[in-house]
Image (cartoon, rainbow, N blue to C red; front, side, top):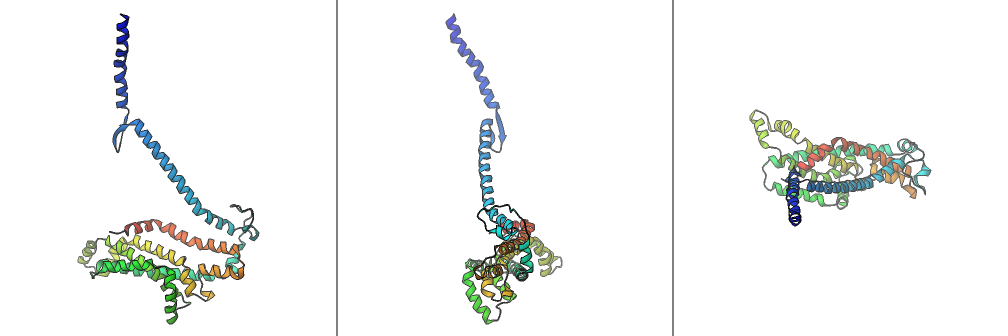
Length: 321
């Protein structure tokens, strides 16, 4: 009798407990984009995703720190006394804050002249390159001419040439037409450098603007110029701003063309003026150099900060169709 109980007990217990475990495993599921999955598998997936994201964020933070650390060092060194700029025990936080470098920069040096020249050249490059790229890109998309795609790609191909390769021929040409040491000469030289990519970008952008909208406006009595001004330009605004930011970055930070085409100290821009004035005679005035770099950094940061959303939109919309 006891043998029968021992034989039936485990089997009976297994029959009683087994289905309950199976029911528990079937009920412990969750719905996500992959369908119904067990909770333990979902938790393991979330755990792995959290680890991957943590590694990604740590990597981004590390790279960002590497990029920002020289900028922070420049900004803090610009407000240090002369004796603390170069020291055996460097520190990111200055022990003493002074603005003497900025006062000397604006009142006892040629930096205001360099800043004025840079603003003039940059404004000219932005205006000229944006106008030419907008009109050229619109013409390539709306005017039916043979081999226009080949022409557009050929123009982009010229963008591959490094500036130093074009500097000497431009110097010879500019010398023959009397444009050395002129704002217009430097504006045209930098525009020639930035225009190929700007034209290609605007061509791609206008390809995404429906021509039917302009046709509807013309059927309503608008001229082609009115349709371009009232229909195409507002839609192409992100692309135009992207081209303006690109031209601004090229013009504000240009060094090669300014070094070759400008020989008069009063016509230098910031990039060449800092090198010519504060590195002269083997003596480097690091206080003025860092203060000048800090001032030169402000306009690009403000320009990109307020227009970055248009830049991202314009660059993404200007991809290949």
